[in-house]
Amino acid sequence: IGVFSAEPGKPAFSGKDEVLKLLKTLAPKDTVVIEARFADPMYEMLRPLLPLVILSSDMPKEEKHKPRPELGGLSIRQALIAVGEGFRGFQADAWCQMLVERMFDQIDDVPFNKSVVVICPDLRRENEAWALREIPQRETPLTLRISPVNSPVNEHHHGATESPIPLQPRDVEIINDHAKGLPAYWRSIVWALAGSLSPSDLGVVLDAATPMGDADALAKFVAERRAPVNGEAVGAQA
Image (cartoon, rainbow, N blue to C red; front, top):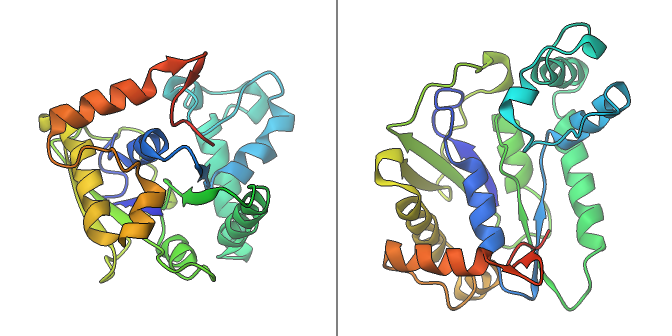
């Protein structure tokens, strides 16, 4: 499952990562959720330069945008952009190839008695979307387009990192209206998947007990699944 924004760079919180968090929460216990990001190799390349910093895609935004002497005064985000664009300069699909290879390596490590869902929440370019749509041995590749409404402006947007991704016939569009709150958005995600996946595929992605109709009931269900059990949140497979 790949996730991209209908308005790249315009909103600060389009809701791409929230799709990942929700599906991790609602995934059945016999399903392993693999998080695959195009940016992961870029973070790995920066780690030797910032050994005391915990680099990850979910690090605080203020840390990501702070100038770093170790990077010649660049912020981590600026350095990531430089690395990303540098590789694209001589091989446009470099990061696509890395993601697919890393993804299959992770799938190979999953026990045979487990189902697997791969979620890529950081699609930003058309070739990245097609890299997921055309992955071999996938019966139902799915890309979700998030259309944010009433969202704040992203002051840190860098136009070089993103470009519009045209909607394809099989893509699913989800409206994320910030004015309606998170439970309403969760409900939109669940309904979008219910309407686009076969029953067997839906069972792999979502627990059969997931409430489908009521946003408040879904919010309660999510809260219960995210409550720590023996120190570990339920449904947080990775």
